[in-house]
Amino acid sequence: MAEIAQSMVKDSIDAFMRDDTDLADQVIARDDEVDLLNYQVYRELLSYMARIRIRSRRRRGCCSSRSTWNGSPITRPISRRW
Image 1 (cartoon, rainbow, N blue to C red):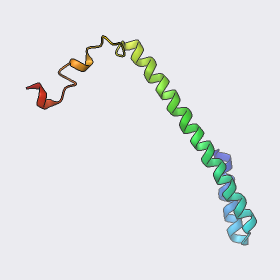
Image 2 (image 1 turned 90 degrees about the horizontal axis):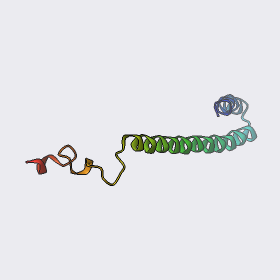
Image 3 (image 1 turned 45 degrees about the horizontal axis):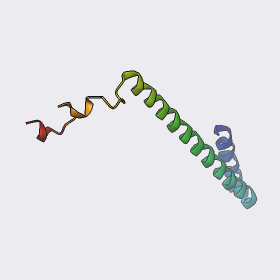
Image 4 (image 1 turned 90 degrees about the vertical axis):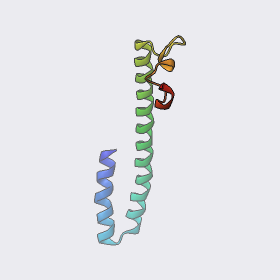
């Protein structure tokens, strides 16, 4: 992705200097490719973080139905504690 973006910068400057609309159109097409790659990386990271979070909760045992977190004074709003 970085290599594509670097070549886009170079080619966009070249297209501007030479007034080359065909090269500018190619840069625009590559921009869509970079956007797609960026979105794919973002989705993969979200998926990875979700898996890590689930594993972490399972290890701590806080995802079971017998968890006491919901009834603890720490998780209740302040107005309900008194």
